[in-house]
Length: 265
Image (tube, rainbow, N blue to C red; front, side, top):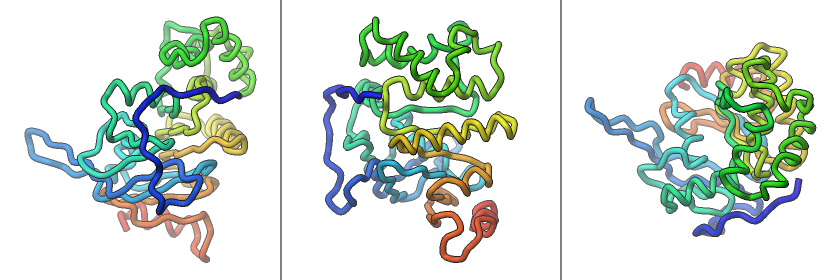
């Protein structure tokens, strides 16, 4: 799929201390929520880099900060302090309008519960990001959406409503939607958590194909089997990165790492 120019947004080059090819660079990232009952710090000084073309899973027990972390990466939420550089843009310095434009051009977001609009057909859901960002002309959008659906084996369902499709098919449509503007980065929050094992395997296979095509994927998951097939695993505990590793590297089994992550280390 051809890449297109992105909106003219303020940008900061990646720090020179990071290796060439780094797509995501988080430095001393802190996020504190303040409510009527006091404050809660969800992220505590996160330092993390993800290189172009990596497939990274983020794991850890509930409440460890996984979803908060990806909300920082996508610009859905803003940090209390620290730096977030993604796709060569310091997104913590952008205002809300700029973040929305940047996200539409650079990040595809996939949710656990699909978030498809039920009143639109599959192909209309896929065209939504293009309609918002205006990255492709009106005449180009239907053909492009259909081509993406065809790539994912979903072209025959293009004109069906989401409620007529299975969970795996709906998630495939959501993946197609995330690819609409040809973003370099795909971020998925528990993308298989609402699927049966067969559908989850299909979705994961689609992710592997996208990585082979040069996409970068960051995936939050509780699924041990899925995580062990990604190329790097980042374990969070109490808002901190406690370890990163390549599955089955250094003589340690995946099961050992996961037992530690679920126990909070």
